Length: 237
Image (tube, rainbow, N blue to C red; front, side, top):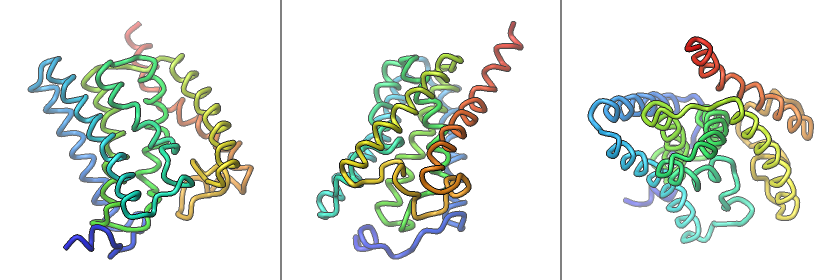
């Protein structure tokens, strides 16, 4: 019975029925959770539930890592929490409990600028019900939900200074992670080569051109993500 959980029975392809249905179900789930939290929970209950969402996302990463270790397939070249999404997962419980504005400012841009792309072009070999598929959607879907919850339930808003902090932190991260990749022979955040599946990097040129292009695209995405809050602030003046 558990074989289908550990052994790939179905390969995954971007934009197939499983992928599109998963995106649709996640969008519906996000709306329901945010709507019900605003309508029926008081401030304290919202905080407790938000923290639970952060823990749920974090546990997806922990469980996935432990499973790979138990199966003997964990490697430091690919299993460490050094991808942007995995790294962000470590911090979301703190964000949802303490509501730290500086942490929110970075994670808002990192998650919506990076994790949304991971939802649209997943780096997945197997489809449901393989455990990698389940935990991939738990982690990445959980990250997006946490940030949307912070915005629409906690009413947290990024400011332009947050955009700058997120950009500088993103560039610094790429430099550090590239050095780590050189030392480990790994490819965290694809600074050494493109992922094996179709992604936005495919239109950014060959290596190492796409690294510079990616920084430019990161800035554009961050500006787009900040635009609604900028316009809202201008209207309220």
